[in-house]
Length: 359
Image 1: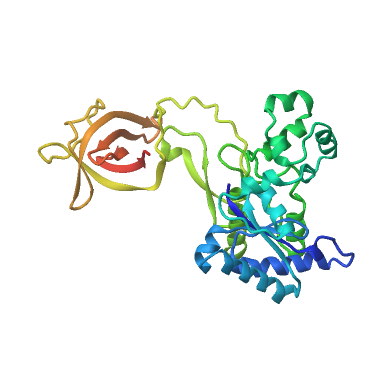
Image 2: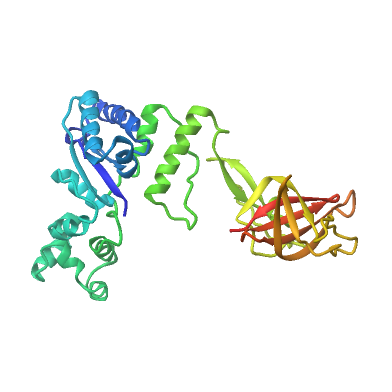
């Protein structure tokens, strides 16, 4: 898990009636973002930031801790308790205790904590009857035995105790970020960006926060994300859309006859690159009217003076679109170069183009 620096500012943990708590928290965030752009507000009074990047920049953990303490004093004239540990759960505990853990010390620290820090009263009471007094005692229980005796919520806590999960359920205040944006006068994002498999992580949250800051400063067209839609070939199926724009929930049920089969290239070029495909004698390789190659490809010229050997190829796959009006005729060819690179080429109007790169 990632090492986190947690800040516990107790005077900001209770919201004041005049709304000054949120305003002070925003002032603190602005000051901390000068040191690290990936600061997260977890709850009132609790902020975290990844330590590795700032530590490299400032020359060590102690320099970062000193800079953070000074920033809190300069902005709020308050003392702050700092803690460093791996994962949000242990980082908050370390901050409340003022403990800075080195890499590899988090497991022992977590196991030594009293069982009550997991925040489940029934578990703490039952644990005492069973002779379980620490998080480590609870973690040592077999997962099957925990599932037999306790609820699903306690089974999640068991994974936290074992270090399989980095934070407690409900440890974050999900409404606080929206409230802070409202106080700052920023628009609330219309939809949520998620990771590849649909989950959220600390890295996803930091990436989203950075994207929103860039978009706020440079405009809605400053950050783009890739989206897939219907099409026959990879370069037609990918497009860029502004970050945060509403996604079109359209089903791609079209059969797309002539669609190029998988695997698809990892990178599809928005602007294809002109290349030359040549045979052993140095003559251009072409695709005939029947969809066959004029010769076996031997080399690929990416730029003038840069020639790469072709050791394998597959295709071509001819494609004719809009046959009822002005037809578009092209063909695709997969090639493997002598350096191990795999590429997808397209030929149209007698010219070869690099349109995709495989991983």
